[in-house]
Every structure is written in structure tokens, then in C-alpha cells.
Length: 330
Image 1 (spheres, rainbow, N blue to C red):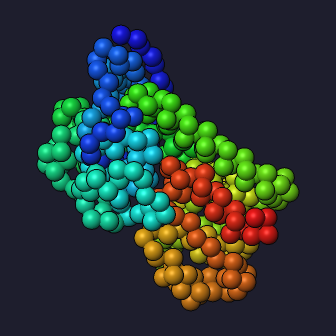
Image 2 (cartoon, rainbow, N blue to C red; image 1 turned 90 degrees about the vertical axis):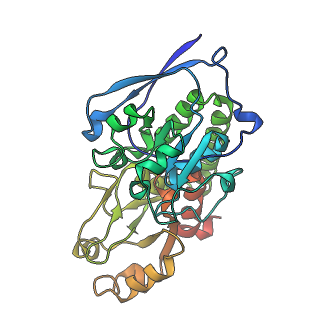
């Protein structure tokens, strides 16, 4: 049995069930390449790091949220899934082969944290992916997972310092774990081609003097917004930069006064599930934002929330954002 070691930095994801496609047929123990991953629990204060060795591909994956479920669908691994939740951030942009055949464990808008452990265990789950808080002591803790034969997966892409390179690492790692390395490599190559094309269309000037944007995720008393990490890198590759890029986190909750003070050139609303119009109306009537230059000039755009966090459609999202910010370049 061949053995390879893959280092993974913890962070979170999610997905679920269907019959296998020819590209994802279960590898036998004889031809499966043993893979060892290091679970970086220390990053999130969830405990000590530990190694897990896969001797066969997980066959009953459960994913928490469209963000992570989409990666499994994109890799052709719907047949290895037994369930997923779309979560609050629903991917309303793209559907993947096999997606509709995988059982949803909750209604859209509901995360796995609100699904009973009994329901997850009844699915036979052997591989669980989601954001770090999914694995907190009050939810599906590492101790709970180990006790019930579940491997908790902590993706690179959820880190506060993540970039597209980390998304590529997740594809590579999952490609090895599930023996779909060629598919993973093809997907990554396609993303890189898309990003290169956007870069060429925009030209160097867009990256030297990026458009300053306020990303409005949610919140009325105070805005929840994107700063660095994967959302920050997504903006960067689209010729933009968050007005809160100085905050050393992927996401943060500054004040409305700070938004006004930083006076963004444009606003990008993160769409959860067709709620962009509602959020636009709020920004146009909110006492803090209604007089912003970006609002008065009508420079309010949108991006899918699930994909903005780092997912299968992230490269396409970069292109979408770039088209909205630089329509004359396309």
C-alpha cells in the first residue's frame, strides 16, 4: 500500500449523498493510496493537532453549507455524500451534476449546527466538513466525531489569511483523499485560466489603483463585512480592495460611522438567497449610508455570499465582480 502525507490547515466546510459516478468509484483497499492529513486544531483553539490516515475513501460525507458542498459536487463526489445543508448563504448561481440527488438535511437557511446529532449519525456520516464553529464543544466536537467514527475536515480556505492558493490546496488534498486527483487538477487549472484572463482584461492599472469597496454582508445595527482572507483575495483579483482590508481577519463587524468615514467607491452586497434588493433598499434608506457617494452614484453591485467565502465558483465570481466594477473592460 503506497503512502503519502498531506498537511492540512484546519478550517471548515460541508456536504452529502447519491449513487457513484464512474469517476468516483470506490477505490479498493488494494489500490487506494494511503493519505495522512494533519488536523490543525490549534489554529481555532479546538485542541492539539493530530494526524489521521485514510486507508480508503470516505463514502458518507456530510457538508455544512453550499460553500463546501459545491467543492465536492465540483469534484464529482456526489456519490460519496449522504447529506448536506445549504446554510444561510445559498449558492443561487450554479448547479452541479448530482447535486439534486443528494439529500438536504435541513431547509435552506439552516446550518448543520441546528440539525440534531441523531439525524447526522443516522446518515452513517464518516466525513464531516464545515467551519470551525461546527466542531466546537457544543456542536460536533472532535471528541464526538472520533467517538462516532467521523473524520472532521478543516479546510485551508476558511482561514482568516486564506487566498486562492489555499483553495487549490483543498482541491489537491481532497483529490488525494478521494482518489480524484486528475479531476482536482483540471478544476484548479480552469480556475487559474479564468483568473489569468480577468487579469489580462483589466490590465495592471486596475491592480495598482484598485477600486475601494464596502462589502455589505448583513447587519443593521452594525455591518458585518469582508476584510482579508478569501473574500479579500477575491476582491483583489477583481481589481478591488475592501475599505476594511487593514483589519487582520476574513470578516469583521465595524461601525457604520467607520463606513461613512472611509467613503467607499462602490458597494458589493453579498446575496444570501435573492435578498440583494432588500439590502439595497436598506442601504438607500439607512441614515448612515443613504448619502454615501457610492449609493448616490448607483455603484451598488452584488456577489454570491457562499461563493465569496471560497468555493468551486470563486474564480467565476472574480470575473463577475470585475465585470460589474469595470464594465468597459469586458
